[in-house]
Each structure stands twice: as structure tokens, then as C-alpha cells.
Image: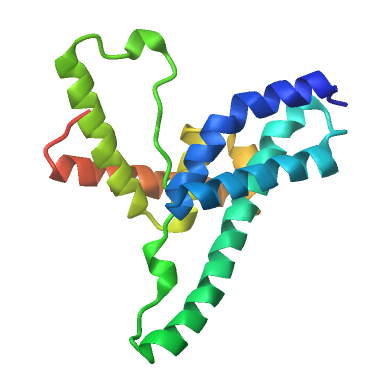
Length: 189
């Protein structure tokens, strides 16, 4: 059972990362903040009695579900707006919203030291952000959970509701696609 202190410590530590995930997913700060707050409240109310070691996986799943719920609501809203305002423009509102997260460097020893290195790294991250948005949603989810959230294959499979083999396939396809896209832009890592 997680103590109130452990729960608060977990929520404080995950807050910024969860907000970034939500912002890049829904591309609206206010909606992202609502999603993260709702996910945190849900975790606290429904799963606060779970062991502290289970909190990251549970929270990741709750957050992903809240993001998916937001997209479903947007799809319904867009359907009504489209039918009333543009009368058959044929525009699908869901295609423009893909979850995206920014990969962060966690080891300060790897942080760029000079202005030139910082510029190059920020440009690389910007390009990587764009390429991640182009990934299919399941590949993007698997890639970000495995390599950004650092979840194991089993934890990612549980969070995504699929098999470990599917997670490995999604991650492999995502990394190959990203590597090819970066190579096409002349970037070799």
C-alpha cells in the first residue's frame, strides 16, 4: 500500500512528463492540464491503496485512457460542427490530432555544453518531434512507453492491452521509421 507521502511524491515526479505527453497529444494546454488533473484524481481516488511500485503503470494507463476519451469527444464535437457549419466539407477532425511526446535527456553528463551543441540538439529534437507525430498511434504509444517512460515490454503490453509480441513489433517498426526519416534528412546518430 502506497502511503500518502509516496503517492504525493509520485504525482509530483510525474506531473511535468504527463503534462508534456498530454500537450503533444491534444495540442492544447488547457485540455492537457484537464486531462492530467483528471488522471491524477482518478489514480488517487481509485488506486491510492495500491503499492507504490504499481503506480507508474496504472497512471500511464489512466492517462492514455483519458487522452483517448478526449479524442472520442472531439470526434463527436467535430461531427456536429462539420455537419452544421461546413455542410459536408469531408474533413475528418481526428486525423489532425496525433499524440506526441518530447524525448528528454535524463543524464546531465549528456547535456550539451556549448551554445552550438545546444542549438544542434534542440533542432534534432524538433525534427524528432515532427517525425514522432507521423507514426501510427499504436507505434507511437509503444515507442514512447518503452523508450521515454522506460516501461518494460510486459508493462507496456499491459498498459496498451496487447501482447508483448505486439509491443515489440510496434517498437521495431517505430524505430525503423524514425531512423529512416532522420537518415533521409541527413541525420546520423
